[in-house]
Amino acid sequence: MNDEILIVAGPTASGKSALALALAEELRGTIINADSMQVYRDLPILTAQPDEAAKARVPHSLFGEIDAADGFSVGTWRERAVSKVAAARDLGRKPILVGGTGLYIRALLDGLAPTPPIPRDVRRATHMLHAELGAAAFHEALRRLDAEAAARLDPADTQRTTRAYEVAIATGRTLGDWHREQRKETAFGARAIVLLPPREPLYAACDARFLDMMAGGAIDEVKSLLARDLDPALPAMRALGVRELAAWLRNESDRDASIAAAQQATRNYAKRQETWFRHQLPEADGLRKRVLAEQFSERLLPDIFAFIRH
Image 1 (cartoon, rainbow, N blue to C red):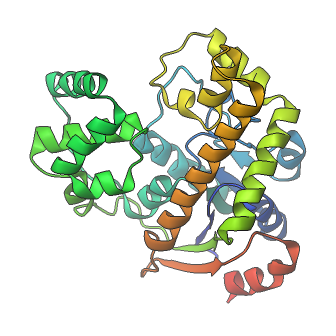
Image 2: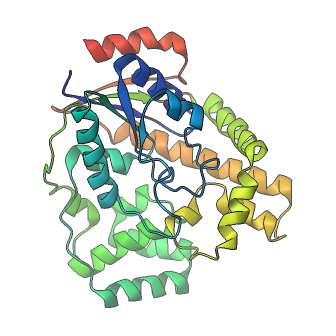
């Protein structure tokens, strides 16, 4: 158990951060971010990053380290996460990964598929086709090439849908085919605590948290981000709430409608996360997991610590 990393996973608003903090304090841990949006420093409120009080209690890594103008791939995250795990161990601390980006967690545990580089002309043609067809029709075109990827990807996720399409066009094989040839670049033993609350209370928590974000200054974050006039295709520009609040700031929607749209987008995302963690993170030789069908509360800690120390 001393050599294992801990993983705290689950959908947004399920209580992952509070659980990770409790674990880190009890086990002398370092919390390492495994959320694709919490890496960006421009949106600490809108992406629910740990506040300064939490950071003062235990070390945190990979939160708010990347500028919104910079892209950030799963491969880059994995390299940094492996380094952060090693650094924590060197200090005698327990590495605790926390986040809701299943692809990141899977990449850390299983390695990355050795997909070949995509020719520039294929990438350009793919993006031109997406612009011509629009998200929904492009998603249907992807389904005809790679039904597996289309089934798990939201049509609005331009970055990942175009990636799956260009891989299929350039290589004649789907992303799933490539992923099944993954190599174990770094072997980690891990224990995962997966929070999967019932949808009704989870959705209520999503709605309430977004209102808290609004009260905490989320609109000012979006205003500052828009003032930079960044490429709307950048990952940070697709963070939950950015598009919806931007519509309000541009007078394309009113405040209440924008908040309602952002809450709906968050609930939709939470549902996709819940489905992923329920079906795509199975136990394996190097992974033991405990699924808790409720949001985190302190009364769960004795059972969680027993699982970790068993």
